[in-house]
Image 1: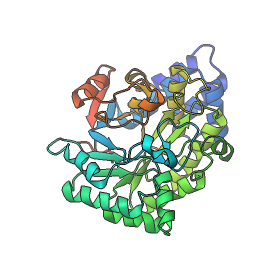
Image 2 (image 1 turned 30 degrees about the horizontal axis):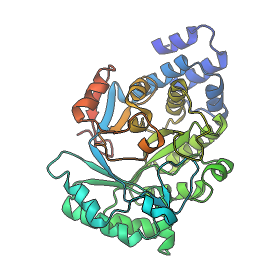
Image 3 (image 1 turned 120 degrees about the vertical axis):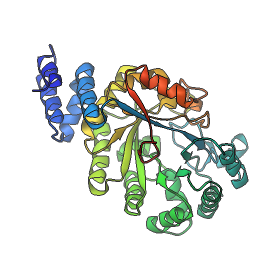
Image 4 (image 1 turned 135 degrees about the horizontal axis):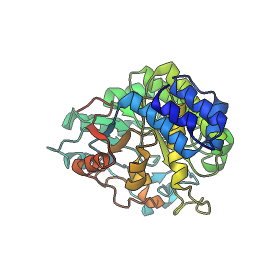
Length: 372
């Protein structure tokens, strides 16, 4: 028995079944959905943290990954009305938002000429006039200007809309974007896969099956992607595990997901502002159960601009091995929702210090987790 297994076994006043489930995971055995739910409902956060930390150390040692990246947000004008969103403006109120031209977005890329960034992350609202051809041209111009820059772009919600509007199927549309320069997909738009929850928080955008189909198609075309889960609103623990289970099944099939990113619901300036935000204890419990349950995901990421630097640092002891990137104050999605980081930017030196001061080894990576 390992030291961590002995600590869990001897932990006082801890549910016996929780201990058994944690020991099962530590021995490399896959948890059933009902076991994941049980951990959420009955798990002591310290035992869950020890278990998740041991699993991440087995995968990555003391390494914590980050990259040098920046965001481009083409528009916050959107045809959809998600109740949790503080970012978008409806198309009929587009004068309240922004719409960037290809030239303006290429200009943002050129601001990083000569700088050691490896990735541009492009996501935004779903604008009816920013169609597939528009974005293919943007991708081509970025690649022509800086061929080495990895383009991670477009949530499944954006892709579903632009591909359908172009009269193509997912394979055709994604292949067209890949040929234009798309390298990988971010994980946004997943929210919670449960159909009833989606009806209540984001009824008018692509459903769970469509989100999964887009990511599966991307994987089959040789593109990797990320996966997210919006937690801490009206969902239950059963909904969270159902969400992870669907991701785990697709990962078994394709192996195309790089990382899982839990995203905390923030309650400022949206139609769900009456809901309280969950505590930091709930945040770290969610990270820990995610690491324990998603046995076929290589990485668990905390998105520090959304959750704050302090909580992100704590999460490194609860199964998290990735802090995303330097960001350079180039995203407004979570600052507009009330996140702690109103001007999200860290230099590589600052992000390395945040990791090192928590007792871990900072490792710069590219988008596909190749060490730089």
